[in-house]
Image 1 (cartoon, rainbow, N blue to C red):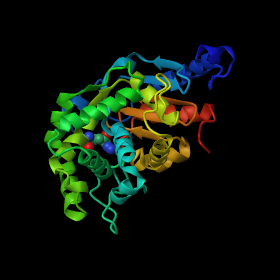
Image 2: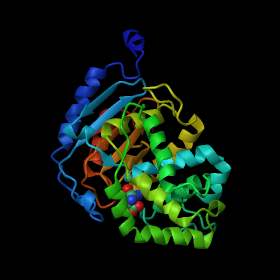
Image 3: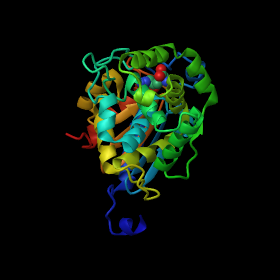
Length: 328
Ligand code: DON
């Protein structure tokens, strides 16, 4: 990093100016009060809605965090989906994944029961049906005697590697328990998947759901999440450790998929307005990838009607207005 800095070869050469700009946009977004916390479980409903954090990490490992909440652990929720999918894809390969999960925008809310009418597959890995299936595929690669917690620990380990190893990745038992108590719709999705096409290698349905809900309950900070975003921006190589966490081909598929499907059924508008692969979660977390330049994460619990963080999306719009990062 220092050698590159001295020879002016960093991907963001004028880092100070960039940070000053980011601070300005961060502060401009802060007064937004629209939207509301997710309310289906107490732990999300009770989160302080004023929390607002932004962390950025370039593919050279230049980093900055803004807002006091950047070290507050929050659950990944749906931000977990692309990584669970990437792990399954890495292990099983494109052909196997394609057999079980399509890569088409759904045009439906994330919790839809609908499957592709011709093939009975989930439309993509970013909606719940596809993410539950991806959790099932991951679980199907383990022996049936292996407990869900062990599988979720493997996922946590992968997040740890994506985040550069020095950052704590936790697990929220209270979130997991509440999720499980209220997961009627996810149970219905799982039974529907099993009843229509069946499950890969006849994996246990309850293990599949526990792995899915466990991945949603992994805890992370915005600071750590920005490093994971940078690893994806860097083709799967972590800018902090230099370790390849996923091959570039896996990252390419996953980023293409979240570009089309990562922002629920606001994904189309987000692609037009912001033009970057991103994944949001109902905790108010958002992970955004600027391919080959940097990754960033925001956290603000108030969600818009589509389930995306209001301030997070507003920040992305401002970023694209002042920097030419829209991929088109
Ligand atoms: O599956 C659920 O209902 C929750 N764990 C919500 C996950 C989430 O962030 C919304 N999903 N796309």
